[in-house]
Length: 115
Image (cartoon, rainbow, N blue to C red; front, side):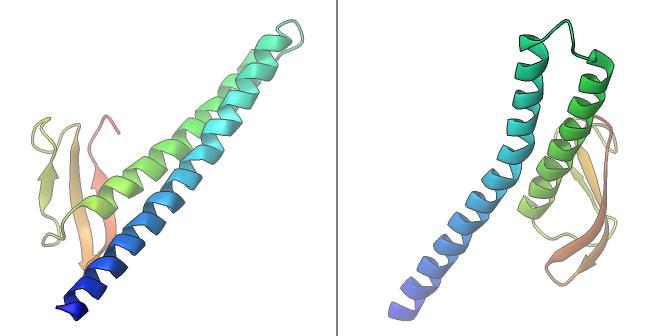
């Protein structure tokens, strides 16, 4: 019984660390985009909006990759090339096709449109 409780406690601790790491990774691009917008809005006459938009798009893409990685890590392991659908149709937006699975790790995957 103690061994089972120890395993549960270690699992909960790993999950807490993972959530803390994921939160930190998402906070960085969010803070960056907020700062860029605040500076651009406080100096609208001197802001180069095209550059600001390009920078914000870059940070947005980074956040999108992070969220996609989190989603893939949350998926149960499936057979290679098995489609995992999230309610938006087979192979369309909201789907992930695993391309390569090694043990319990998805080593490559393709996300459908909309991500």
